[in-house]
Image 1 (cartoon, helix red, strand yellow):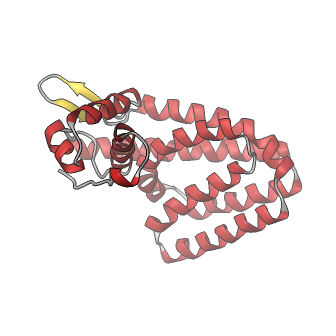
Image 2 (cartoon, helix red, strand yellow):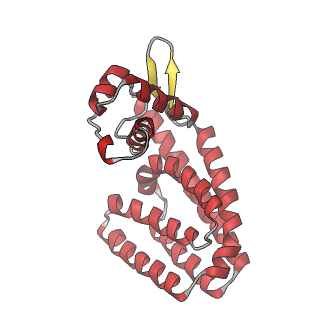
Image 3 (cartoon, rainbow, N blue to C red):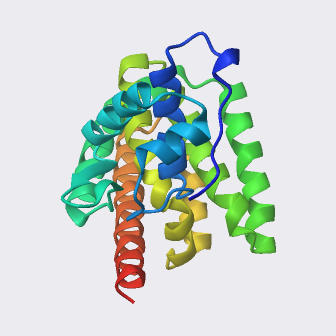
Length: 229
C-alpha cells in the first residue's frame, strides 16, 4: 500500500474533506494506481483518522467516478474508460470555447509576455527531452491562458475536468506525434490572442484540444494493455 499522509491539525476543514482531497490527489497522480484496493482499516490507520470520515471521503470519490465498490473486493480505484475520456473532453471543449471571447477582450500585454516567458521555458525542456517537467508546465500554460477570461464559474468546471486529465497527461505527452508542432501551436495561440483574431483562436483551440484528447485516448489504450499483461 502506498504511504500517504496528511496533518489534519493544520487544517480547519472537516477531516472527511481533507481525506477526500488527499486520496483524490493520490489517485489522480497514480500514487494509488487503478485496480488498487482501498482497505478501510489500513488507510484509516495510515491517515490517523477514524473509519467514519474515511467512508464519507470514499463516497465522494465514488460520485467522482474514481473508485467503485466491487463484490468480494470492496472499494477499488476505478480505471478510466474511453467513454470517460470522451465525456471529459466534451465538457472541457464546450467550456473552453465559452472563455475565448473574454480572453481576447481581457488579455493584457503583461499577460502575453508572461505566457511567452513560460513558452521559452518549455523550449528549453523540449530541447533537453525533459518530458516529466514539461508535462505540468504545459498544463500550467493552458491554465494561465484560460484564466485570463476571469469567468470563475466556468474556470471551476474546466479545472474539475483537468484534474482527471492529469491522470494521463504525463503518459500522453510522451506519445504526441510531433511535440515541436504541438508546442508551436502554443505560440500561435498567444499570437492570435494578441491579434484579437477570435475566429482563428477558436479554430486552433478546437484543433489543439482534439489532439490532446487523441493522445489521452492512446495513453489510456497503452495503460489498459499494460494491465492485461
